[in-house]
Length: 170
Image (tube, rainbow, N blue to C red; front, top):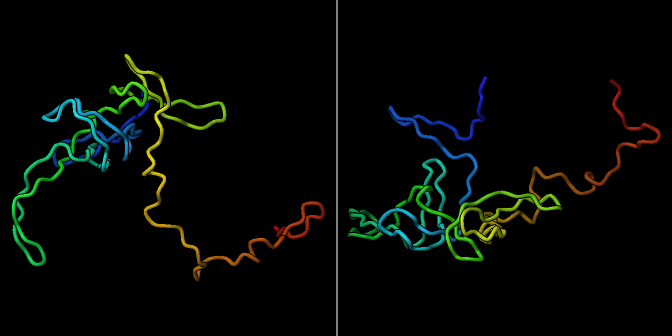
């Protein structure tokens, strides 16, 4: 029996194991400040979250030179690309004070779950969900496909609660 709850998943990589974060506080589109590394103190937005490596890519930060060999359809050269940062090296910015803060979770009176700023000097205000997460990458289909149930079958009443008609004989 385990005394403490399992908060992260352990994945084996070669001979080492890596602890993966279960409950992510940093989301794609968040405004973050880099607190460690060569771009320390700079702010930017999270472009991509790599959950399998506990890393994030911040837009325009942590640039490294990449040597790319020429191939069919593209030419080679030396390019600057954004390298991933470990999630522990970035902190979400407080929307009121503009300073880095920890992220907590709180439930409002109506039951909705929101992120709030925590820590020393934090305002305790709600950190809004980024707008980019509300946009679907693949739009919902507007036309019925071959496996969709027609609407007249969906709206058809097949069970009457008062008479018990429509119940299968078991």
